[in-house]
Image (tube, rainbow, N blue to C red; front, side, top):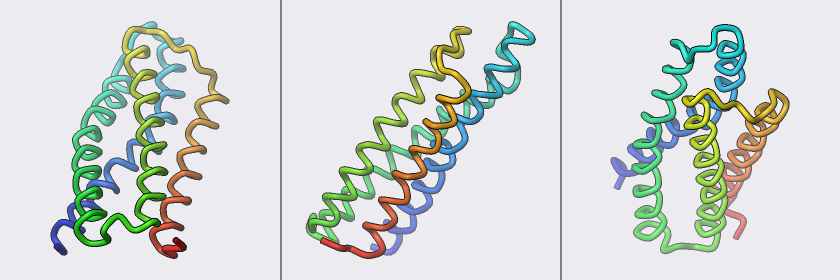
Length: 137
């Protein structure tokens, strides 16, 4: 069981890297695209980071659901955590939509929107960590 926890934490760390970095990278990609009219290395890096973290997300979700069922029998705090993780999943999918549009040269979101979008994910992670550490329910 410890190995599953280790895999879960490792995958979550990788997924969170993308959740925090990709919206910020989209700001710089957008600026670079405005100057050059091309996606360039920054766009490629942003896309690859997002794509790589998708696999980590899947493994994090699978191991997390398994641990929630097998170790904690879906205790109320686990259900709250899964609800918050579901919101992060939606955030991640929205980010993916922005990345797909950016690859086509379409940047609809402002720099301010992307910054706020990025900060919302931080609040979500803080909520998840609070539930996991304190197990209030």
